[in-house]
Structures are given as C-alpha cells and as structure tokens.
Amino acid sequence: MYQIQNTHEIDYRIIGEEMQCVEIELDPQETVIAEAGSLMMMDNEIQMQTVFGDGSKGEQSFMGKMFSAGKRVLTGESLFMTAYTNGGRAKKCVTFASPYPGKVIPLDVTALGGKVICQKDAFLCAAQGTAIGIEFQKRIGVGLFGGEGFIMQKVEGDGLAFVHAGGTIIERDLQPGEVLKVDTGCIVAFTQGIDYDIEFVGGIKNTLFGGEGLFFGILRGPGKVWIQSLPFSRLADKIISSAPKMGGKRKGEGSILGGLGDILDGN
Image (tube, rainbow, N blue to C red):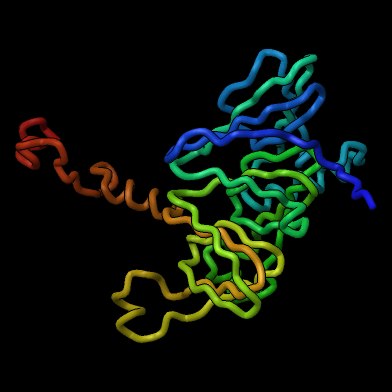
C-alpha cells in the first residue's frame, strides 16, 4: 500500500556549529517555504514568491487564506511567508540562517506522527505542503505560567521541516509514563503524544531565592522532546542587563584598566 505524499521531497545539509544555517537542494519545480527574513543566499534560478499564511493549500479561497494568515499572527509571526521554487532545469540551492546563536533541527514530520508542537518562534523552513498552524494549550495553568502563553506553533504534514533554537539541543525519547522536569523556557518542541503540564517549584527558599522561576515544565511520555540550553529570552536579558545605557555595568573585559579606563574614556 502506497501513502500519498503531499509535500515536496527535499535534500538538505546543515552547515556550521554554533551559528548554523541549512542549505536546501531543490530539484526543478520543487519548492520550500520559509519565514520572512530567514533567507541567507540562493542560486540564480531560484524564484521567490510571497504567500499568505503557509501556502500549504494552493487552491484556498481568499477568506481561507486570510484565516490561515490570521492564525500566524496569533503566534507573533508575519502574515506572509516566502516560497522559493527552483525555476531552472538543474538542481539549485537556497540557504536559510537562524536568527540567533543556536542549532537547526531537522524534523521528519511523517516519522513523528504527522504533527510536532513547538515554541512560537521556532519554525524556520519546510517543504511546500507543510502546514504551519496554532496549538492552543487546554490547561489554564500551562497557558498562564508555561512561558509560551496559551498558543504554540504546530507543524503538520508528511515532509521535512526545520526549526531553530538557542544554544545546544538535547533530544529525549520519553517512554510511556516517563516524566521530565524542565525550565519552561527551555522547551523547543515535542510530539503530539507528550502530555505538557506545569508544577509549582515548592518551598519558600526555592521560590524566593532559587532563581529558577516559580514553575517547572512537566513533560510526560510517550514521545520525543527537544530541549534548548539557551532560550533567546535568557540571552536577551543577559545582554540588556550588561548594557551600560540600559542601567547595566560593563565588566571591563579585555582591558587592563577596567573601570578606570571607562572613566578616562568619559564612559
């Protein structure tokens, strides 16, 4: 029995270590969709087309396209995505880059049950035909205190998709009933079989002085989860707290004079 595949099959290679990008090799007339602003470079005969929503349903009505695009706005993304099609007669490449230091994760959505749920800004690019939608958190506690709000992204289809995350990525395969406690900001993605909930840290000292937030994310198997070591919010907070113009303090790295050098420079 043959399974009908609606997405384009694409070849790829991930380049780099700490600041990764993904190079997609397209056969003639193959198409890949990507978030606006993620393009790094492309061969001459690659054609760009801006589409409403994710472009997964080419014959959609105008209202259908508006609804699809509106769902993307709820996740904080643009109304539009960009489709890149190989208009030539030979294989051509298009390359997409992560917006901040971290890793690019290839997801075979078919092998993962046809659906992966991820943090709102994780999606990078995918084979055409992949649907990018929204996933509502049904538990009020998760929506209020889970770090991602009530709405997350979901990637559906039967092809390859690529997501990005900060720092190093750890993939865990949880067995039925197995529980993993994580910082809520470190959750990148998980398969649809994972039960996601939150748990109060507990203890007055832990709550007031632990520095790890008030809640853990609780991931219960079966299924796969992807965890990031450096959430972008944590990186941004560190940069802002160290910026002199934002009230932070320079550490004087690389300077023998340190703070005295700042005074002499007029800083």
